[in-house]
Image (cartoon, rainbow, N blue to C red; front, side, top):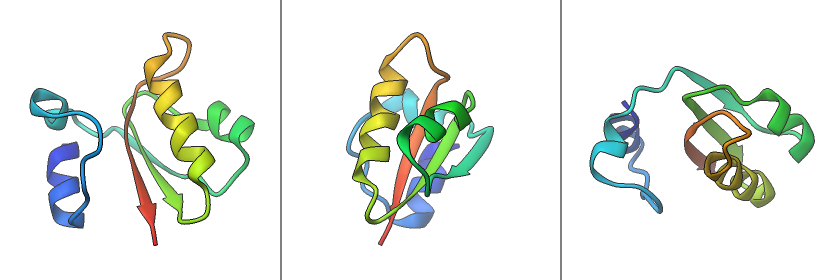
Length: 80
């Protein structure tokens, strides 16, 4: 579950709470790519791992999650 992964990583939750943290991660993606390639690669229930210099991927992931046209992104994790 996304909440358990967040706790293990010591990650800060910046969006979502409660039942949202009980969702099961079904896939993950290391998003060291351009935004169009990222948007074509996400799958429903994805955990996105983002290199520290790719804030555009985090923003694209949040926007994709809000859209009805893209699969559901469960979380983004920045790797410093």
